[in-house]
Length: 239
Image (cartoon, rainbow, N blue to C red; front, side):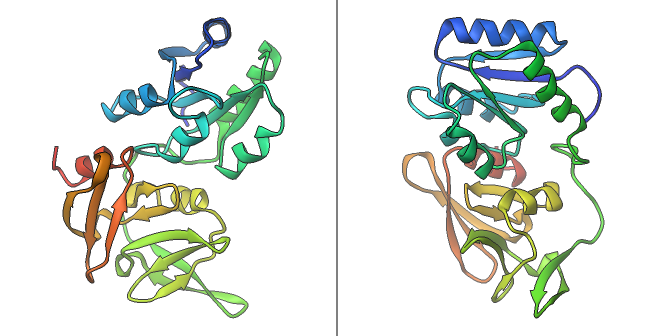
């Protein structure tokens, strides 16, 4: 992540807490590009393709919780969860959050979070990598490297990320966030447990409630979440 002033979105349904966090962020040098009150508003705002460096999401919000929003993002963003309950931190990190903040948020604690965002290892969000890429596939006590173009999609299940390349192959990645970080813009999020290689999509049709059905090379058809559908349409130049 670059050292420019961080552009951040704040989602918090309690006005006092929202104003406080927004003030602290601005005092710390951030540009607050949106202040929203509920989960659906976050997904609607992001679906317009707005540029933002990080999301500060209250966990308990009406409509969709911060955890729901994080699982349904149209493309990957660094997420910081804000909560009054320390026990939510475990679930936050299960969803690969960059950090979490306990209410009431303090300037000192926020400074640490912003430093993590600025120095977060290596990945430039939203950039398109180029060149060949090979997937690390587990083989005995080692790995073999398989050309990414052989895979259509990746699924997290049974505590592992599996690549589908004519057969189901266990990768060396332990979480979908780890796979997503390694693959970058070579894949697009389909839902909380699914990454799809856009070039493998050979057909799309409307699903229920704003979802999308995508057909992959080889004939597999998968359902894409409502939040992810706009990003996939954008990558396929269908919008």
